[in-house]
Length: 74
Image (tube, helix red, strand yellow):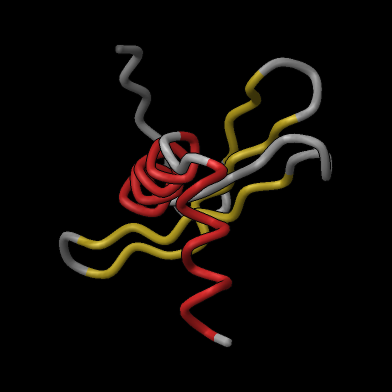
């Protein structure tokens, strides 16, 4: 892991397209501004993990499960 020190309003570059700027620092909380192209998803880690978990669940659904679910709604 690369660890960098930055002050408020200073930035770091990730590659040519992603800019991370320190927006605010209050106590032990740091607010970051992230500029990235639209094709690069940016999520908090806990949201990213939840998305992966839901995608894994959806991947395990069998076609028969979907049919059964539709029949139960009728």
